[in-house]
Image (cartoon, rainbow, N blue to C red; front, side, top):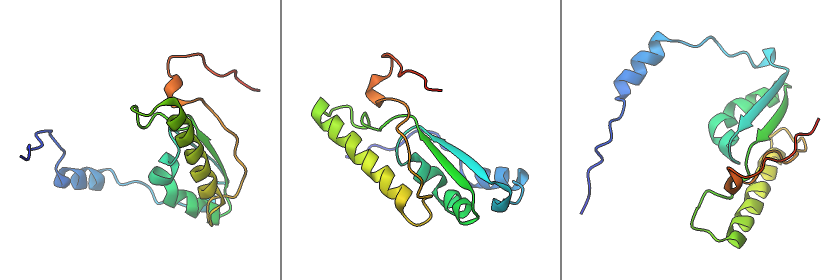
Length: 127
């Protein structure tokens, strides 16, 4: 049995009209020498800004990526060992994306905390 999706969505025509009414200025990648991207989870930067990051890198911009969590809480049903394994996989994927052509190639540093630690103690702030 198929249950119809009754959530309201914005019709494509409404999106097109809004985009036409609020045109963004032309993007000049050479105007951006240093760019910081903040992503909540690993791969958010790739999915949300991967294309523009590649263009910025090709134009010579220095890219810095901050990822707030390690993504290990993406599947709440996982036990602790599986979450640890998932976090390791997410770190490896992020490192591979960084080393790929156009990925910036710069070393990263872990930032933030495990997604499952929300509400727990925050890591110390470094200076």
